[in-house]
Amino acid sequence: MIIVSAGDTKFVPGMMMLIYSAWINNRNARFYVIDAGISPDGRKKLSAFCADHGISCQIVGVDPAFLAQLPKSVNWSPAMYARLFIPDLLAEHDKAIYIDGDAVVNSDISELWQLDLGEDLVAGALDGLMTPAFLADIGLRADQYINSGVLVMNLALWRAERIAEQAIALLLDRPGLEFPDQTAINLVARDRVRYIDRKFNFFAREYTRFPKMIPRIIHYPGPDKPWSNKRSPLADVFDAYREVSGADIPKPKRGWQFKTFRRTVFGLLTLRPKHWRRLRYRLHYRSTFIDPHVAELRAKAMAARAPAPEGSGA
Image (cartoon, rainbow, N blue to C red; front, side, top):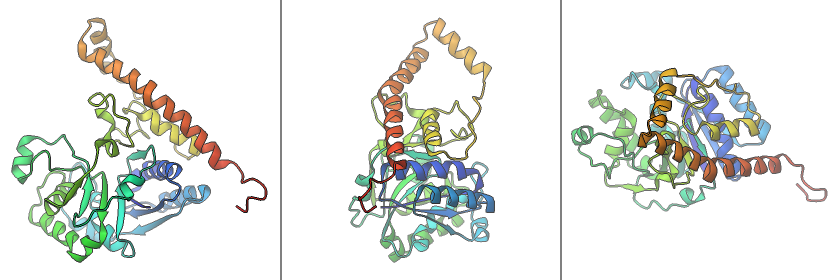
């Protein structure tokens, strides 16, 4: 199983936990990290962390000067384009699972790896958050547009059909495109997408919409990352991986937001349905997913650290 992520220095804590969480649940996985602006200290920290756990992880570089030529965004760094270079950077592989550096893998994901994509270029989960106006502007429907945070990529076809070059040409031709890399992938892969269940790209902040879904991969999109804000939804899961892995990631402070606290308390006291529903879902998620998963994770981590029995040959 080949898993790829990409990012800059700010995403090093996230990529450490992505790699550890994927490895502890998929021990046959091999990892690649695309360096799209990681500092020397960040590279050293990431490499040392993987080596300490015996995780196979190779850091590969992409030319920052080339990334800088692509359209800039006020919301994302040029690192977002790194996934377009995976087919060429991993020329010896015909398939890879790409996962954003702000995600954790909570289970065996061999189901994704075993997907036979056939003539499809990519597999991904529907985004579900795009506005009708945006979708109309790019000529796609809501049931076509996928989120690029988790992708199964048919690297062989990407290389054969020069899909990355098509995406880059589109980006240069339409520099004002929203969600640039993601939208470009959706457009060049139109009608050649395999759709996967949302549980493989579960947005943390959307947990109240899907209270019965047990996420296989939790994705933390948006500005509030679980390594910097304890109040980030489902941050407890990220924090559990941080704790059991022994990663040198400072525990974030619980960002105190008085207005949010006051609004929540007022809503509960005045019996507003949405506030009680949110509380009920939060408690439900803790009892059905977070607490059992953390207990299982601790057991897996202890097993991973345990020495091999004498005479096992390990």
